[in-house]
Length: 476
Image (tube, rainbow, N blue to C red; front, side):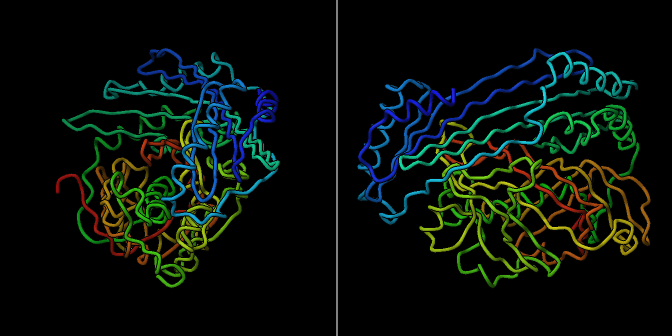
């Protein structure tokens, strides 16, 4: 198919200064077992192409599932019509055309044989059977999604980028009910998602997760509510993931700062004049845009407009340095950015997106962080979230809490919640965990844009301690 697309591309004709074809072919398999009953497996394949034209400052695109030469030419013609129609209204300079890159990237594990549908189902059946061991476990399930994709970007002046991906998303959850209370434990809140093959299942500790999570759900229904008050919080990586995502990632998206999301998912408290001087967090905070770790969920070599991707610090020693903005947004804003112009599929145009947004490891061991807390709570696994339309005020709930008293982990507590303000929360960062506390997680479905695009992002982080946070339990 890739060779055929290249051949058809060679026959296309357009007199614009820049034009490109972005071909995407995705294949996915999903198996799920709920309460020991296998649901119907889901097999999916989706292929198509987006034709993009930049001419005289105008920008146009058109998508098609007709991958014949005639179908691609028709889409190219429509895209060129849009580029001409928008030229007089453009906010872009006339020379803002994307680059013409060449290269290839292959996900880890892409060369190994995929697990068969039977293998995936057997793995899910085993975890489901292990989870439902107690009558107080009222719901439980195990699932595995495997997705492969080929992305091909061709441009009119010789650009040719082929990126081959393999994604895996394992998930297990168990829900317990007793004494009028219901509690759920899950495998990182479906946050364990990576590029790779069978190794991802081993790294996620999928085998054995059913029993382990069911036992933790039972512990929660017998636990007291989290206490209310100001205290230190120790956020483990599967909660740091969501904290990074909502209160750093979305506020730093440059198109959002420029107002593009205002009528849909809101704006940002961040403004252009903050970059280079604004204290986003304490001196312990270093946040990178890093699409280079091979196994992280949103790693790639080039973004969907062909910009070469490389690691860049967005926040350094607490100071805000640069936004999450691709080439075109950078030109609009007159500000530096990163290679993060991405689309969820062939039928959506690329926009500024998070990719891998990571907190860099620090120097504190987990034992030292716990020992340094007189009164606090350790929080794991995001359960709920709410954040205002400028991505500033937030409130998060977690599945699991454990009190820290006089430097020691003590009682398990349920329904732990905390709240804060993005603009000040990160300045309360007191300790950043070392590499031993670091984990690579993410989310497969971050939504943004009109029409909506659900796309995968990665978030790697160590455990972190924040001081004087407003914590409250389920009875408030």
